[in-house]
Each structure stands twice: as C-alpha cells, then as structure tokens.
Image 1 (cartoon, rainbow, N blue to C red):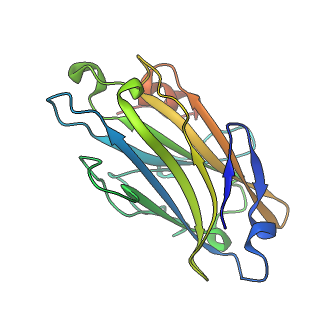
Image 2 (image 1 turned 180 degrees about the vertical axis):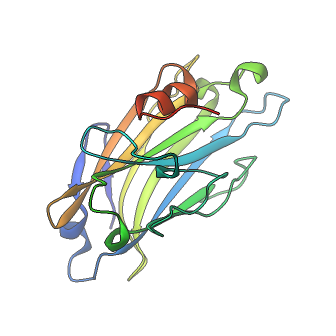
Length: 193
C-alpha cells in the first residue's frame, strides 16, 4: 500500500520498495481542471539539478519539447492537453541507475500553458496528485495530493527525488513558483527561449 504524504513529507524509496529492485520508476501526475471555456493544458517537466538546485545544461530540463534526457535517465511520455479522464494525465519514466553522478535532484514541476492569456491558475485545478511507482513490481510507493489550489499561481514545484548516497528519497514539496515557468527556469539556472 502506498504511503500518502503531506506537504513536506519525505520517504526513502529503497525502504518502501522492500525486496523488489528499485531502478525504473514511473512518476504519474493527474489533475481535474475546471471548465473555463478555454483549453486547460497543464504541463509536467523535470529539472535534473546539482546540489545547488541548478541545471548544468539546457538538456537537463525534460518536458514535452525535450522528451528524453541525453543520459536516458528521464523520459517524458507525452503531453495531455486536457486533463480529462481518471488516472495519470502525464507520466515520466526514470531510470535511477542512469542518472548522471553530478545530478542530485530530479525536480518535478507542473505549469499551466498560456495561463495568463487564458485567465487560468491552480485555484481552478482540483484533485492534483503525483505518485511514484516501482516498475519492477508495479507497486505504488508514495502519493502526494495537493490539498488546495492557489488563485493566481500557474507554476508548481510538485515534488522531487533526491539522491542520498545509495538511496533515493521522495520529497512532497507543493510550493508555487513566482513568475510561472519562466521563473522556475531562471531559478534552476536556465533561460526561457
């Protein structure tokens, strides 16, 4: 049974995985957007960062426009442009043994595409969650559900996996980023372009 985390919660993925090998994990994200009359497109992305939470190169930002990290460690499975339906709206695959040694964190961020022009924000999103599944036995290890949206906010640092010597931990973050996705890119040492 998966551990349900609250904001700020941390678990050891190796401990939760038990005897099953832990290398290939699936990160599933889901949400239910309000019907605002305009398309409502949430986009998941991953920042592969060093110990200072900075990306070393532009390729360390994996999203619908750069689906596979050059190491093969992170693969974005595609963009759901509606959020309609049950289960995961977007999925990201991670192979932990392929994560470059300089990378300490795999930070998962969700942003709302064209939020300002469409008048959209996380206050209009319900049932947002992120979950981690060990693909060796398809067991969900942890889940974090966002308890409340935020009016006026359009970019969320949802969670991160952090390398801890031979283990990886999962951190439920749930913090909104000022400046939208451009602000998140700048905070991680990248430039929107």
